[in-house]
Image (cartoon, rainbow, N blue to C red; front, top):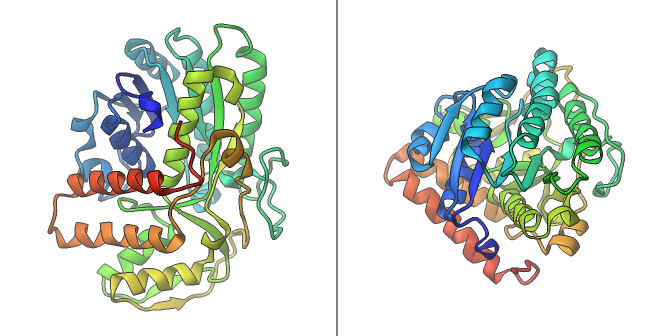
Length: 362
């Protein structure tokens, strides 16, 4: 996988205690990488990081805040990584309404801290900077946004990620053009689903909570349209992008979208019903929305990732939802080792890549 580039490589991963970070830490370790994670303590109960004992599976785990620039810098200098994957963030739209300052500090200043710390470490050759599809100025048009379209954002989370994209572009042009500068690219993904996510105000984790509490599933915005993808889809994009940055340097130091195909762009109500169908129980109801703004339509154009990187989505939304529900069902019935089951799902995804005629393995 990924031209065996990660075998023996030292990888510094921020946000490793989170949902996506835990999956990426395990996948990198499976690929033979030596992983150092840097993150706050897990902020959900339960958490995938703790339930699968991810700390014991990686080389090193540092609990710290990316706003603590001194501790962050020392962690990177001590580890001497070859590549940095920056996932740490305040990732929730609705939380950004109650915590706007924290959202901007974490997402903008925190990212700048990681970029600067990596700049001081001579071993760093590549940097994958993860943002979001919500970084675009969303006009709710019926097509996917391309990488060169304007940044923006209605809510504070979305606009903070737009700022991260602008800041990252400026940082690249200001400081990374020399021979010593590392190759840094940004990665934008859509609504990610998968087992092990227990964050609040996310559709499938909320559905799972309601089902296991034997309550009706309440959803806010049933007609909102989102691109749904299994967590391993964008992670495969990040890993492929990291491979290209390590192999060919600054040729790939740009922004890339990693989203699903058009048939995986579904309404919230459709996804909730598919969760119920796969779980075999539950009932979906709609309750009155609050006054907080949420986008009704947001899609990504992924032609650049397909043409430039050779990446393309592998799972349909139906497969992604089925794999996600399967993970939660096993977790709550406690009938299987969830670490081994998670590795099995990664292996199954790797096999699906091999059968994906559009995915170019170099």
